[in-house]
Length: 337
Image (cartoon, rainbow, N blue to C red; front, side, top):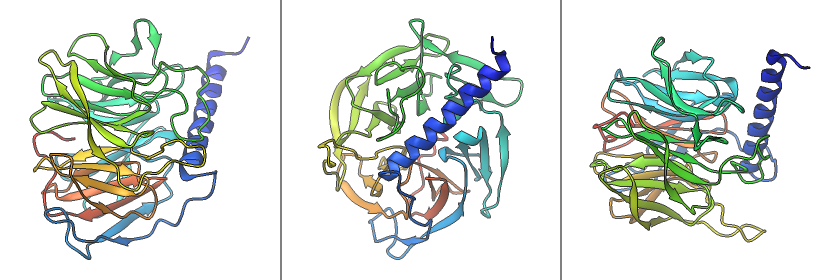
């Protein structure tokens, strides 16, 4: 019989290979990604000036997800396959913020300042507090006794409840299926101190997730759909009135006839504009869902977050690289994400 340590090592290997295959598939046919280079933004009124540089911070990370700003203006993000969280300071220097993160992906802070993560190591998937040291806690690790497959992103409301997405099998187009088939594509809500409940089903591949500034609307990216979705939030945290909030620009069916927008992480600014990482760049919509423009990125971005002393810097991570761009309007200042 294999030892427990050997089993854990094998699970981690399967997980790493799965993520590697998913990222290759997301880039298209297993081809190498384009170089991580600077790009130049065109004007998006109120969002970014024409000619603003989208600057490469660094390439060569080992998985890039879950960015979130810290109170001092720096940013942290997850290197999921490296099992760590990395910090980028105001000068663009990088350092290790936290190690042994149980394959953390999406990150969020609660009102107590605790860092909550989506943890994705096969056999140990959960939503839980990961920092500061000594405050670690599991918020949920199952739905009705069934373990989560590979949950993806999360956002925490002012009541301490957590919304998170479970994309379902094949977490990226062309990706390898996890070792254990996960629960179907679902959005869950974990009330403070409670158990996970289903709040949205029937989305082809729910991915990035975000709250409106007034926390009356939940936005959900659909990686295999044409639309960014919106739901009204009821007093108990459950959802109603699903609708197509905004249509992703430039999304067409692939050779197999499937819609693959690549829609991933979400961010929101202080005017309620919604920013979404897609295969064509960071698309920006106003608070009513009108398309305003796209910030070009040299590689397909995976996730985004506002940071900086004035929260006017948008950080973009994806395909093992990180960028930043100075914007005109700060990110929403009512919560970290």
